[in-house]
Image 1 (cartoon, one colour):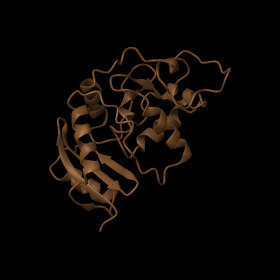
Image 2 (cartoon, helix red, strand yellow):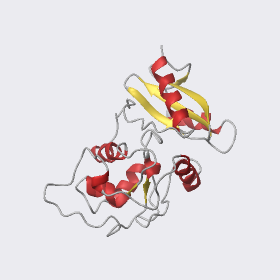
Image 3 (cartoon, one colour):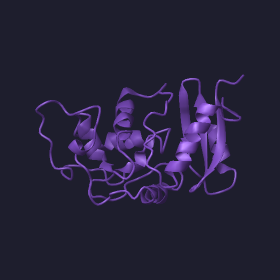
Length: 207
């Protein structure tokens, strides 16, 4: 019996894919521009995964993703992920990103400040660009400091990112501060928190 599997499923934005293992999801694939491309990319990303019928717990996640992409408000924050192979820095970024609710946004710099590393905005963008679980880890909700869309490494680039934010009716013109979001990693006690728009240099980072 295979230890990893994957399946494609239709959503309001096109055909997505999900790959899973014994410890949780190992990756999510957003729609590609040509038929069969999502399948091919999943095979390249997860060569040990076998296309198969999703087990009930994975089917439930697929249903929740479909609902979110149809205007639902599920934050998917409790979906188990296989975190093997991820750096400690990336895991901190993903943990904070998962605290951003549908319809809300933050910035690369704000995520860095929440980690207690205010100079790491570009590194945050790089980590989000390496995110194996777009949508479940909502890297599309992290924008550039100016309120611009920023980069997006998933298929479709910034166009896909803008579409996801539109589906969520995201507040892209009023970026929340650290205190508007319940981050599990806070800045050091007594640290000064600058303006959300100050000192951030990631205009086109991935994520």
